[in-house]
Length: 240
Image (cartoon, rainbow, N blue to C red):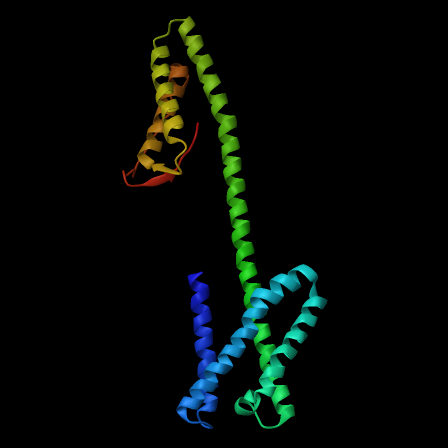
């Protein structure tokens, strides 16, 4: 919104400067200033009526033919008082045909400028909308993945603990402790968008140790090496 206001402001400053520059040689300073302001107001009316009324309410709803007809009607509605009030003589020329041609060209320019601005704005909105949809899709896929992977991991680990408990293996209590730490982290911290990297490292360490406790003799080749972890680093939460 701030960006749009700045663009609009700079555009009208530029238009005013061009108009004032063309009139200052024919009129005194005060008169040239007044006429330049009047010309800018007329151009602003053309632009914003097209941008805020004709495009969204006619072009978007009724189609191109109705829009073109509305633009022509709006031209007549503006030109008649413009000509009758002699503004055309002050701003453009004393000759009627030159007033009509000049006003038509000026009108067309600002209709096109406002239309192009609308097109660019629509493109930006569409891009933003697509990005939001993409993010929502990724979030949904991540949540689905979490819902699929976590139960599998949990049931698999519980089965391993059960098997070790039957044989009264010393690793069973340790596995329960590690699993408890993992579940506590997933439940209480897993919903946060960002978590400290060191907490994720602890999750990986607990997960690795839990896997090693399942079959301690079969995992001698597994080694976990972690470097460069700082307390201030943040990362998206991972899940088992």
